[in-house]
Image (cartoon, rainbow, N blue to C red; front, side, top):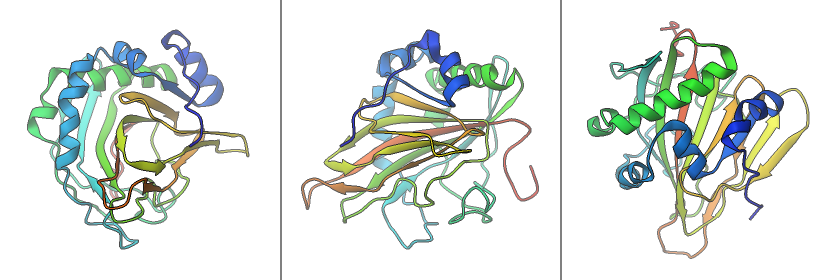
Amino acid sequence: MTPPPPLTAPGDLSAQLHAAGWAVLGADSFSGLVAVPPAAWQRWAPQWGALPPDQHLRDGGRYRRRRHGCFVVDSATVRAMPHRPHWQPVEYNALHGGIQRRFEPLPAELAADPAWQALLLGLARVTDGLRGSRPWFVEAHPFRIDASEGIGRPTPEGAHRDGVDLVAVVFMGRSNVKGGETRVFDARGPQGVRFTLSEPFSVLLLDDERVIHETTPIQPLQAAEPSWRDTLVLTYRQGGFQGPDAL
């Protein structure tokens, strides 16, 4: 397993994102930044065990489980939006782009949790620091990658951008897993870093215009035992949600 990532202090976050296009915050730093207490993360974590299967995997796999939710964050307000398909253009997702993928919505109790709203607001402030203050169109994706049957692919589309302004990958945990190396590369050249996220509730932040990212496949350490890797991916985009009609 590659080493853990170099961590950024909250006070250095803006400078790190502007200089490198990415940063990793440890769990305590991230919880403090977004005003989400550790008890909230622990309260949410069991929901990953109940995620429904992803029915849209074009590689024929059965290794991914997920839900999806959409929000608009404007100043100090978080608005849950009507449930909608997830859509990406082919230039950002060669495997699943160009199709409307409908996933089960987030649990109502999660979307209404004040700590969840604090999380979305806190990351909006980070995105404000990158692009300036404006309404942010946020998509939330809780993922479980299950390797119990052999191999699970966190990013089956390969190294990619998401077509947004900020990507936040909150690492929720892993069990009986080898692999899962995170790779972040400058979109304009060969410079990059490799590391393995291992601290629950830490976060990888990405300026999506400047970097591409991927995570390598996972496999079980012990055969015939449950094997999984959980993340929460939050994307922030200006101007509207991605969609075939630019909704």
